[in-house]
Structure formats: C-alpha cells, structure tokens
Image (cartoon, rainbow, N blue to C red; front, side, top):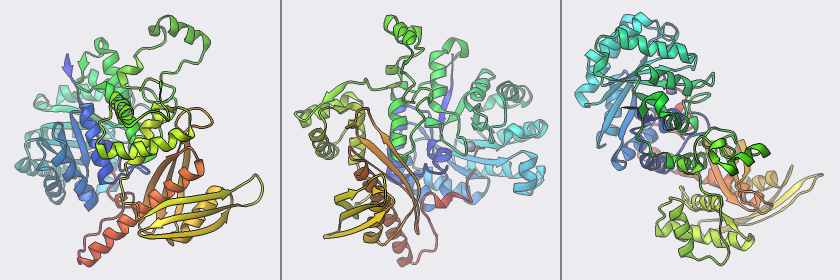
Length: 528
Ligand code: KIV
Ligand code: ZN
C-alpha cells in the first residue's frame, strides 16, 4: 500500500481565519501536539505576514524536530528569504511558494499575463531551491485553472526544482469526480510528474473538501493538506481527522496508509478548541460530542449486543477519554497526576501544582470531577499570558426584570482595585465594572458559554472575542459559576491586549519601524 503524507496547515490556513488566531505559546503547544499526532509536515505559518508569524515559525522550526516544517511564501524573493530565515534551523525545512494560475485571479487579482505568472513561478522555485532542498509549489485556484496552462506551469516548476506540487481547490468549487479526474489528467499529461509528490489542498465551501481529497488520492495524489477540526479560510479546509480515519477505516478500498497516530486525534481537536475558544459542532464526524453517542433505543440495544452493529470505529481508536467518574475531594496530587498520565497528558510539576489548586477548589464545590473537567482545568491553569489583572472577588445581582449589577475586585500589580457597575444582566454589569477599572473598554465581538459535562454543577467554559485599540483578542476561562467564568475570560483577553500594548511600546522605544499587529489584525492583506 502507498503512504499518503499528511500536511497539516492548522497553524497557517487554519490560524489565519477569523477567531482562530493564537499567540506564540499557543502555536508552539499546538505544534507539539501535531508532532505527537505524527503528521508528516507542519505548515507553521506565513513568515512575511508579520513579526509575530515569523517568530512563531522560527520557534516551531527550532523546537519541533520530527516533522518537516514548512513556511509559506508568495513567489517574491523577499517572501522566500523571510521564509527561509524562519525555517532554516528546522531539522527538515520546506519552503512552500505559491501563485495563482486561474484566469480570474490573473486578470483581476494579479493583473498579469499567463507568461508573466509562469516566469514568476519558475524564478521563485529556482531561487527557493538555492536555499532549501525541499520546495513545494502551489498553483492557487488550480481547480478553476485552464488545464493546458496548468500542465505547462507544473512541468516548468518541476524542471525548476520543485519537490512537491500542490493542486489547491482554493474556493471549494470542485466536485469529487471532477477533482479526481483533474489529478489523473495531470499525472497523464505532465511528463516529469513522477519526479514530485503530488499534493492536494481542498477547501470546504460546498462541504466536499474531504471527498475531493479522497478522490484525489484514488487518482494518485500522495500528500493531502488538511487541518484539525477542518478549520481554515471561510468554510475551512479538509478535516484531518475525517481524512485520516477514512484511510484507517477503509484501507482496502483506498489502498493507502498513513503514519498518523489516530489515538492522538481527540487531544489535538480538544486542544485546538481550548486554545482558540472555538468549539466543534456536536455532530461533527470523529470529534463531535455526539460522534460516538447512540441515542435511539434500537441502536443502543445493537451496540450493547455487539458494538460493530452501529460503530465503524471505536472511540478509543481516536483517543476519546472513557467517560469515567474519577476523582473527588479526597483525591490527592498523586492521583491527579496519574489520571492526567492515563489521559495522555504529560504534566510538569509546575503545571500539576496549578491544576491541583484548581482541582481542590472544584472538588470542594462538586462531588465528582469528570475527566473532561480535569482537562479543562489543566488548560485553564496554564496561563499563556502574564496576568496583569486578576479577579479577586465578584458579586453580581440579576433577575428577569430590570438591571443587573456587579461589584468587582481586581488585583493589578501590588494594587487592589474595586468598582461597581450596572448592565443589562450580571455579565454585562461585570464587564462594565471591569472596563471602569482597567480603563480599556473592549467591544465584545463574540461570546459563548458551554458546559463541559452534564449536571447542574458542571464546569462551564466561557469564550470571548474582544476588540481593543490594540486589535482583537480571544479569552477563555472555566468555572462552575458562569459569571465568574465570563469575568475571567474577559480578563484573559484584556491581559493579552496588554501584552501587545507593551510590545508596541517597546518597539516604539527602540525606534523600530516594522509594525507587527495583533494576530487578527495582521492578516487582512496576506490572507490566501
Ligand atoms: O487555498 C489555497 O490555495 C492556499 C494555497 C496557499 C495553498 O491556501
Ligand atoms: Zn487554502
């Protein structure tokens, strides 16, 4: 059986989409989990897009040693140089350069002729090969490109030294039979195609990204670009977990294998949701809350008699934790550590200390603590930003009529500051009181609250997306009290904005002119 290489672009195509931005620490954490998942290639970012992107790619290249680390670059020498600067310390660097090949992009976006684009592609690949042994070329919008021109471009970039050629369905327009046929045609008509790995990159605008990727593999593609939870531009990219499990569950039909460790899928999905605050829909294949839940009586009966009646794969095969009640208020540090280990989390002594503090608080309020809650408190304890402001006390009053009010006490350095405010309800009032204290009012772009497990005493996770003068920032926090979770999530976003504020002040002091912005802001002109 042939191996299909899994190229994960969660940290590039995924991260550039609204609401999914991550800071350096978060990207590094995600990259480490992708390494545990054993993806073959991690596309770590777009180094020329901002200083933040550059730093993240550089750090991942230095620290994540097993997979190939790719950086994205347009077909400009400045992009390629910046990309190489970021990835060169990787054990296995790859420059990924791209230019559009469809007439609609040439005419309206690039305003270049086919000959000019062809020359630019050749020049970029040739130049990239002077720096790096491994160079991937992508023909953006290949799915809508003229086939004769596409064949010419691909033959030429292979001649110029490309080692991987990627065929994106950039706008998610293709349908499986057609996309498979495109891959077959390229294999038949590009004379030197056997010299490269043929890759595909499918977007999900019509919900067909995974189906198109499968059709491509059936017609000879051997690298598939995809993302955890299917995140990415607009409707997203092909979902890694769906594609990988299709290979694992149907090897005979697809005649291909992958080295990905499917038991790490759930952790990767959960980590991404936790880092970005974007939950997956309950009925999402493989990683949704309901993916292994059997509700109908006939189904439950069947599963109890023989799981294979209604289960084509086991929850264990994708690493879903068994839903066991594990710990309570009498459990000690050691038990907590062991439980984390058995859930697959390597926890440092410092992380365990913080998680244990939160665990004892939680266990005091609840009789039993579920595995899912343990995972949430572990993440909640890992503050990825310095806590300039932290919540010391919160009291709210609400009701079904009239205003809510809140009194908030925050610590800020060695000061304790208290203020009160009213609002439409207790959360609104809390946010108003926090704004009065911090004097950096944020505009709430998005807010969500999710219960982590069941029961009236379940832990709730609050996620916010807030606009400040410094840019847009996400925040998250967990608590059995929804108002407290909401307050701490908002403070988490404020603390991130303050880090950016300080960074900008330092840059201004140092007299540097290169302007890097918050992750969300920095992208608009670079998005691909
Ligand atoms: O969708 C696309 O075409 C891309 C390329 C840069 C690979 O993301
Ligand atoms: Zn894309």
